[in-house]
Image (tube, rainbow over all chains, first blue to last red; front, side):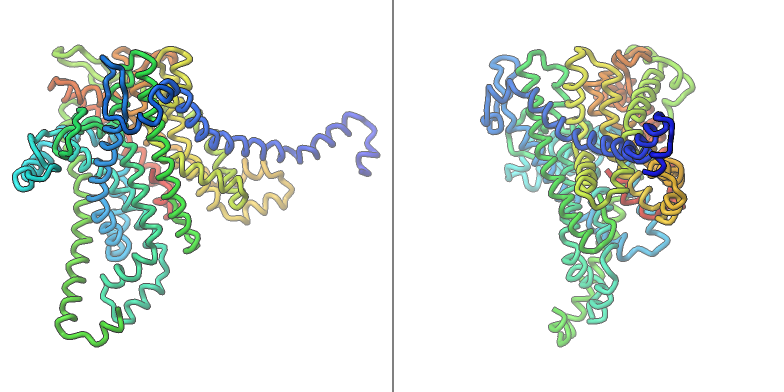
Length: 328
Length: 295
């Protein structure tokens, strides 16, 4: 106040008042930071809004029936239903998790508990490189290498031995739901492995020492002490992997065969929500068709949002309990 | 369980040891099975892609089916343009939001931002593609490189925000406090003390985001759309590396398959070099980076 009172020039007074109002630029800086943050958060809302707006025709025409209709006939009757795609996504993701949970968790246990120190870093690096391979490269490799060399012989074997089950009826195709599921398994390994490794590493050593001191074997320590202790984090890792499998697009589109097959056979080609969008989006010649595809995108968005919300909450909860920095 | 173990019969003791050995072996086998596909993929991409790599592959435009020669220079330029545009949008916003998350860790908005970022990183890229289509392509009524740049910015933002946040948090509090005690304003402290100290780490985040965005094919299907000709106009459709691989791979021509493998080799080399560089930069700074890099 004294300084302001003695300053004779009104311009100096104004400038100093302005400076103190903006706290020498800090208020502006905080506004800028907050604005950037807000922009990020608005993104989620904006995605939801745009998908909702641009699927209006389809939502009004088919209502909730969209989710339970098996018909997809853009050419003649202009009837659209998402059930085959929802089922296709769920089936391929289920196959992926069935394979990836034991192998991914096993690898995490090996990396966190058993691996010698010098091997831990390089192995961790390899797992993270696996996450960095672009999905279109997975698709290319899946289509020309993985299917003919691994998946097709496996499918033929399954058809021979278990062909009486409706899951494994023939004829055997190369591109199939099984191929997509088994490729997705490889793609979710890194997610499941890396997050659950971090969860295991965050468990205090006293837990291990106590179990070993009481006479547990190494495996009993892992199975009866460590895994229950970090369970919610491990569950979070698996759900995060599920989220990745649900939304995977290009690789799946390349190996699933893209066929509206309504049989239960895993050996037949199928479709997923993401792959129908990838395949037909640019071919949608009239608005209802386009809106039906965008509504599938909306379903996928809501599904992955929920899945991710659950996974993050589980992982955050375990991180807070262990007061460790486990994030995924 | 353990009290039972104390008066176990000899048979049970042996059984426990057998289970122990079997399960520990299983975890080792699982590790091999998880790492094996990576080596298989890398080996095959190199083996099948190398024959396609010639100087002309990097300098020529694609040729029609059956005409020998031709390259992917349009896709290289397109990827550079779209990813560069994406980084230009995502980096400033992402770095500012990351600083916010790091400096306000326990406020409601700070937590919401961290949580929101984690959630966005889980939104499938095809959904992001539809969003950009509705936002940019529909109003403009044509596919364009700028719509591709925008969708790639959305995909990059979470990685940049999270890495920035982690790296800024690693800057010792004493540095920040020292600057504030000398009378520097908060923004001055952030801009000329904290950010330079965290710069390596922030750069790591941007590089990882670029590596991830460069491999995205799904949203390119209906934003960049592809273009067999050279294009540097951001308002026109444009070819990108991942989209080129997709188109070549699903076409029924052996000639194109060979080019798909060549392009895959180029793309995977690019992504791995970026990833390794990012990790090298960060190696000395953070062991924990592993938790930042995924997704």
